[in-house]
Image (tube, rainbow, N blue to C red; front, side, top):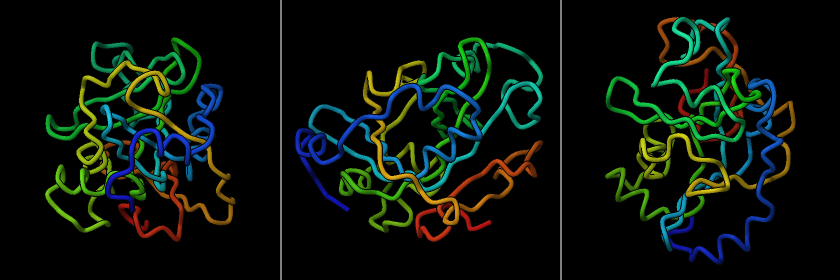
Length: 208
């Protein structure tokens, strides 16, 4: 992990930003595509982020675990209905912010929850925010991740690569290295195999 790189140095080292086309389509496909990519959050010269190692896909009204399942468009879930590349942030149990990248065409619900990253940039900042220096506890789990990255409701309805949150391309993770399981922490739809993670990563929140 890097304890403090300048914004310019991080940009130079990361390569190309992901095209918004990456997010336009089935969340199950986009979720797998996002594995291994690099998520960066910038606040002036403060840069934090890392490699995405765990995600969950959320679909539309047919998905019982989705915010689109029963009530249609509400003030809480409106961002989930697009357009693709939108940042959907919501509070879970009124405590933890959850970071999602929106997929599907404008007006159709679908998103990918970012559950864990392998920290790469801004380790000291993340440690201060999290109150721990243990690398495996910085961003392994969606609530820890948003705390470490400083993501709040102010990021809701912004756009990837047009604000504080950026996503950078990286080599595709081979299919053989990707594991699948049911989603975590849901009261409905938890058994659907829509959680994807890099099987050998030490930074995932849970192995199965």
